[in-house]
Length: 274
Image 1 (tube, rainbow, N blue to C red):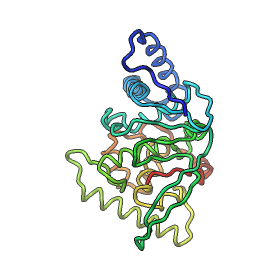
Image 2: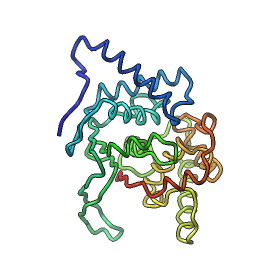
Image 3: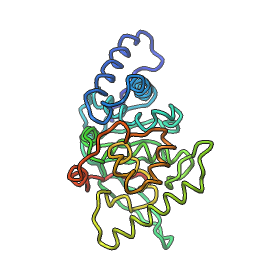
């Protein structure tokens, strides 16, 4: 593995950082995900992304040929959910490990009967409890397209969820938010979605969201930032809770995505967070 960083304690990097931040600002205008942000919001997004590039270790693994554009693309997407939350939402972990393609992860898990299992999964993203976020570089790049699927936002949502302990679909709520309202909104939405899948109903939301309440939160976070109108229409209470939590209203700045675009993005979610 090869580590990349911006030399957080070194001197004489101001010009390089200024050039990097100019590139970051340019990237926000070049992709639909961030192109509609106001100039003031772009400035804060660039500052958060720059802080990630300065403060976290980007690790090229599996023979990945590193390019600064990889880190900058990841940092901008990772900063979007934290735009109105601040840098504290991205604390508690240090590394972003990036592979040249999907990667194999070995994990332990406990089933409903309490039995411990160990196995391997092929993933394109993972937010590990022991620290790092792990991503596939091409999938992180593909996440720039607006299709409801974004592996970077998915894993950052898991990390934000983990700020309260285990990923369970309930991140630390802000003062004034009701834990009961959060639980009722998400519980009803999750049960309704799982029941629809069990009944064989197809829809716009990726079936991967039914894997676990934590995955439901992470997947709905992806759609909230990429296809907010669909979330607002079919899960209005969840949209309200997400808007209160992330302190953003993406439906006000993005155009509605056609259903065909959402369906084309389904099945890509080989992400894992818990």
